Image 1: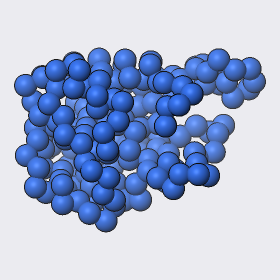
Image 2: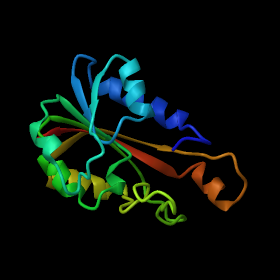
Image 3: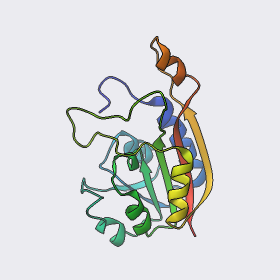
Image 4: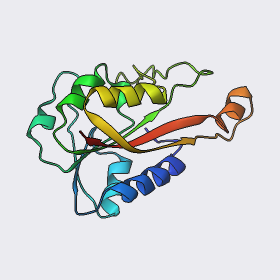
Length: 173
């Protein structure tokens, strides 16, 4: 997935946001298979368990049986058909979720070679906020940031000042 580029800025800001809200003594269920960022969380002293690749749209059993203090969902909800069900089924009282934001100047991402690497949703911030509210979460903190790229052109120029990522810390109401 990160063969050519590694999202250093996004990972740095995500870790800072996590450390601001979650103690290393709290256990984390990270939605999605083990990935470079779950390894970064472990290196930072967190106890992290990942889901095992099950299709969370169809099978939410891991959310019903796990007793983690916190659920993290970094860059996963855009791939799901029904994030409402998943958010409703989470038993933990704390949630950190980040998404790539919908960009008006770029179509939704779709890999032609990897069926799992496609965006069904590309949210605007208010849409994620509304989804969280409707599923019983109260947003405590949020942050956005850009994702500039080192290329020439109109889209790269727009990416230098248009927010691309949105991260939220929420607690169960």
